[in-house]
Image (cartoon, rainbow, N blue to C red; front, side, top):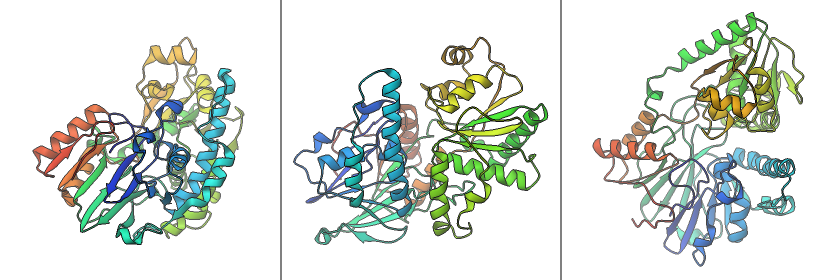
Length: 439
């Protein structure tokens, strides 16, 4: 049963019933839509929930976990060690952000959970490394074997394999089949009977044609051009994942002499996340040294006090109002010497989405400016597999049943048609919200 959003990206949550036992796969929220997007856990009243599996620490897969635990207090919570470390930071930070937004909007703050509640829940988190099979604690008689696979999306992200009574189920979470700058790409089981897969870039026909090196070269040229005219480049980034990947790319370009050595400012939650990467990255990928980001982190920016030329990595990646990325963008957009580099996905309904789509009239209205002078460029450094990579994965695993999720309506329809036309799976399903599927 899909409890989260079925035809958009947000509030991921799936329920599996295996005989007398029940599992939740993720417990997300749409952080931009507020408390109204919590999955309807009340629909599971009277049904068993023995374990909650978290694929990774982005809020659209994690953000309602305390609410899920409140509904199912006897469930154990499983994730990788890196996801456990990141989840604690992200869940506390979400509370602070929501409280700040409520104050600015002058409305009563109604938190999904309290800091005290969250503190009490942390002891439930149980973590296992990749490729280490385990059972649900206290329910060994269930004969449910669980294994985390490296999903290649962010630090600690996992595909979740479930084996029960000779059947295999695999949930991709968010997956990236090819390498990023830090992460080495996803690993998958050799076969599965039921595949539950994301389809984020299913409607993007351009992505499979792009070559990462071309965009690396484009970014280097863009930075050189702006620095030449004593400008600055704003790169709105998600604190978790995009910040670290782009930091590493810029470090590499500067080290290779392809980009001049200018100050790189890091803003917001990315600073805290860097410390977790420093502690855990080398344990997953031994070719990185401990405290790697500490050696490349440049200046920390808490207010709009930066010098030019420079590069500014700022959260939020969506450029939401009352964030430094929004405030800096407001200054940058009217100055032709500056640039804004969009390096990832942005919800079209957010300011970042309007900038990414270069919707001039909407940009002027959102940021309160008369003209857009700043040079905006989009670069494709995604943390998701494009649609051909997803199809390659499905072909390799060759599932009997494929359940499509985590994508807009167009992406879901395109993926379903292609999986059926290429005969990659016997049955392909786009589930409706709270629809019960029987296998």
